[in-house]
Image (tube, rainbow, N blue to C red; front, side, top):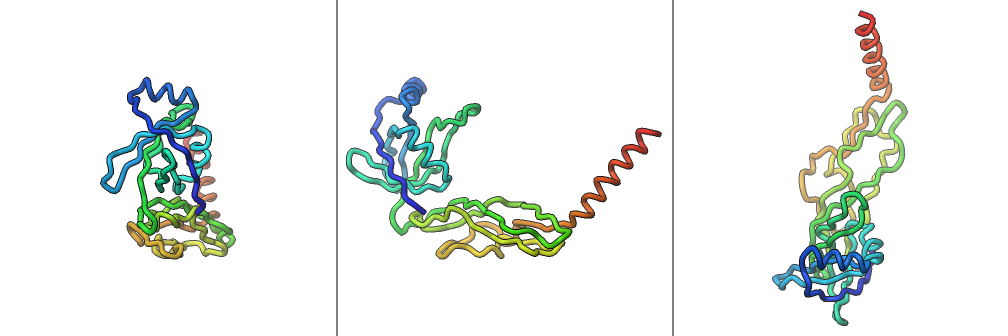
Length: 197
């Protein structure tokens, strides 16, 4: 994963009014915490922060007055309608330290003819090194037969990653697409009969 550098400005004004003023100036209020240190309140550049946080598990180098600090986003608050970033909580991390993150799953390929893939999970919770968080996990379902269930423990993980959570959790199930279509047709026919009666 690539590291993103952001220049932060320390802030001493708090409250909704101060936060609104920052956002008007195209900045994002944020707080850095972790490793037993006092929380550090900063302002981040709005556009650069929005680009950096397109990846939910971005590794950030926060530059404050010439000192650099590694951090990952722990909570990103967005405006309900506009989607713009309102506030960011950043967790301080160190080189070699392990963190727990949700990593997106990307399925490739198509199941065997007559099969339809139904994703039950879109991400896996993993413990990984803070400086080696994967962008995602690719998993091929090419040729998977109807009736197959793929569990979390069957997904190959990136080197150094450990699965957190239930290895028996179903990630993807391949169902019979022809039967599903038949069921819909039968339901429509039953509705038509009921309407006539």
